[in-house]
Length: 250
Image: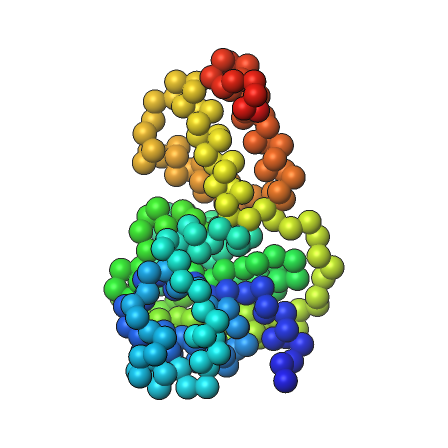
């Protein structure tokens, strides 16, 4: 029987990006099972469902494997997610986006009652691409005693999952507020703002600083679907007024 803490994890998802070892997937599911996280999503994984190494290392957690979902891209895996964290052993220039596992656990516990939350873990050998990292709302930095940290996939999942389990157990459940918009809604407003900028003869290319900064800025907001709809309408109205869009399109 699940305890009350675990019951709250129905909205919590572990997302693995292109895992290359079936045994690692099995080890991850065992860590998830121990911490009560039921949902696994995989982006372009190696074959794993009936691989003996996976079944051995994922002992007594095959129900997670059976229910796991596969996606062709990280963007699609996160499309219905309200808030996502990218776990990494690296730090970066966007310092304000980085949480410790403990800090991230507090954020997750605050949101679990009303939102789908994803914990994203990158490739075993090279993590995620820059474009993939821009899909995350925040990053979890897992500190290490060595200069070049080398946590394996299941260890990283266990560190983060344990902190969430520990924090959620003592965190008061709050009444659901209006849900944050899903990732695909934010992708839509991002595209609309970008198209508006291009219609105003903005010349920076799609890999430029503004393009990435816009994505980062939107990822930091807590807009609900109704908020996104307001800005959608503003973008379309401006494009119509400037003659860049037909009236029937708005």
